[in-house]
Length: 475
Image 1 (tube, helix red, strand yellow):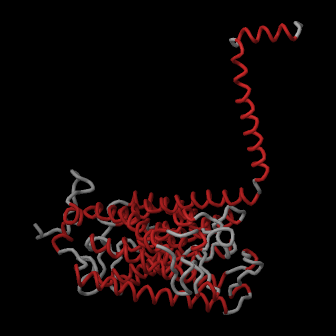
Image 2: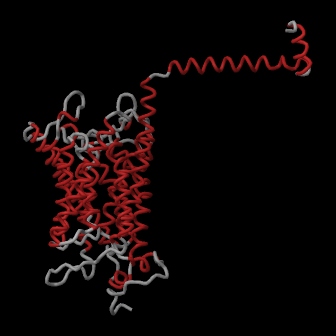
Image 3: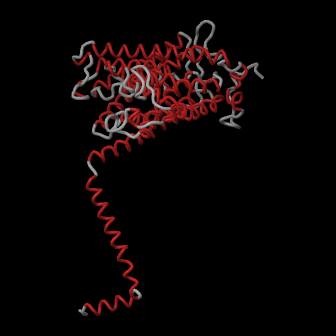
């Protein structure tokens, strides 16, 4: 082995003289930076990692809930007629954009602003202010303001898009846009504050984990009032009260939409835990049980009633089960989630017939799915809440069937009635003002030819054969 001085001379010759000495400061900087990084890594606590995981998980759930807009668009378009496909698709696409802006401007403040009271929140316009202003941070919900806003605006958009299906095929496009803004900027945030913003319903102990009432019933009540003020589609009901079927044009995309919504609900319900913890998987399982039970129940009930299995009822049964289990997906046991979803699937079949009997024309069954089953799911918490499956601060809530008495059931009824009454009153005002200023309904000629041409000047299936069976004399 050559002596050290010979090795040094060879190295000196290869690197071109003393130039290698300039690398010494760089090496020292690298060592210093490495030491600081290692020190910082040592200071990173498990709590810091958990906060990061919580934010990432809730963001992923936000994306899933936003993707549900595609599901709603597919279901509603498939259940409506070909001549109105562009109109339905456009409404479902633009409504989330409008909801985002309305909620960013004022809705988020009204719902979560800590400067308000038990009835309405108040924060700052355009998502301003520190996280603490919205109950966020180490002393509240440990999420960033951006994460929490994105998750909540996805819910606001869901409430608005529920309305779209119930008023489809005869409402003016601009009227729907105006109502959607009013719903997501004012009506939905105020009732949402009563529970999720720490308002008076939260103080009393009302329970709606992911929004059977706060989201789905609010959208359902608003949809019901809109359908009532619009009146039925032309040809839907005969003078003797007979119901005429106006079948949707594409059950393939309606089925795809149902599957997208089923997937998206795993962001809707497990995401409402607002944390990446071991409870997420439990909530996902109860959610899935509710959906499956609802779909099976609706299929067999409609099969028994009509003699054939009805795909549209299977679709709505799955959605009914999902809506039904949403309020109590964390407090129901597995058996409870199954029963609640099963009953939801049965209810939706009879609800469709009920609304037809009172001539409320809902082309997609939105009121049956979201209103009726939203009420049922919220009520079911007071019946099936199992204290062995939920803890919050060391205390669980108990339904009537698990020894809880009538207390929780009474609170659930109170929440259903107050949220419903407020939404009906405010929605009625909104619809009547829009109707008096702009008129709600398109002309008879536009309705017969289709809103795609009358409202948008284009067709979804240009060049394809049209169904002209309901256009006699309108040429």
